[in-house]
Length: 495
Image (cartoon, rainbow, N blue to C red; front, side, top):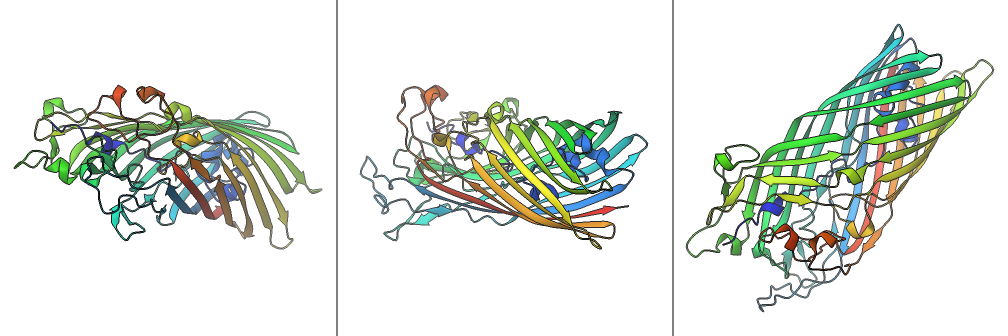
């Protein structure tokens, strides 16, 4: 009679690009807080604005760069471990929830690209990733103030996740008239995601571990297709304008899931161990086959379309050489269109052969709007140095009530800076950025508990119940603190 309880094991809202992006690609662009849509004058224009590739002039350029992202996140859940209504209290019942911390490692985000001009055409190839911090590494159990070992308070949100997207790309720029260039980029990439979290097999208001499921999924998509386009206008020596658009990144990942059932679920039938086993091949929605511990699984999601525009003011010396610039960019990220994540597991309960139900995961995403101000100043005679700075603000990717750990959705302020040095035909960049999301406190919000569609914060799903009759059980009330520190390094060779 216990069926479908592993479905929410697939409620793995992947955030390897985040619920929103964190920081900016490249090295010089990262120093300028991403205010680079009009300035883009190295091969990273392939990402920021392919139309600006023509700015490299009659040269060939190769860019090698990496940004190192350090992510600090903590969560203090409100309240304490609940008592069991049946009186079967664990030793930690009544203890306050302890603070939990992410201890994921520093994450590198590389960018490699090359560009050159031939006649009236500028061409580029490269590989990059959406900039962010997708790794999460939280405990699955904690020690409480009484010394008891207890299930981690954030386990229904996330235990761990690791993921990567790489987008090998090619782009071009072409001048359609004096001072006006258009460009486009095509990308064919891949994604790989691993994630683990706990779920409830039976309605479990006391959050007892023997009624939980522990699930890990491993899925990949090797056929991601996306594109971008841009325009660059430079009709005056002192002003430039750039605008670009990037299409959504649709991911249809396929792989397997390993589900471990809590003691009560595993031994629900006396003398018979219950497992999640593959469905018959004729019933499979993801792929035939599979095995216990490797149930065929598929996950469909997308990263949003984005659009940005930048206006740049330039100062020059008497010979026309750039001495400095100031650019302001605005950006739109269409997160509201990609809030739905659909996960399917081709598994069934071994005792009564009822299939696991699909899982729709919501994060309450809303569109993100940002403004970025960046600038650079050249100084030095024999050797040219350039100092850069940037400031930025991004709106929230979700209302406060939807805050959770597997994505970072708080509004953000950022500050960045760095130094570039020309050494012969090479430019060496080094910089640092601080991204400081607003700390948040989430409260349990009263709602119509009989209407599952009226929820305004995430619930612990119970897949034994129909989608329109899920019990109200939010898990995200508490205090959130998040910080990013990003070090950027780049080497650009020109000849």
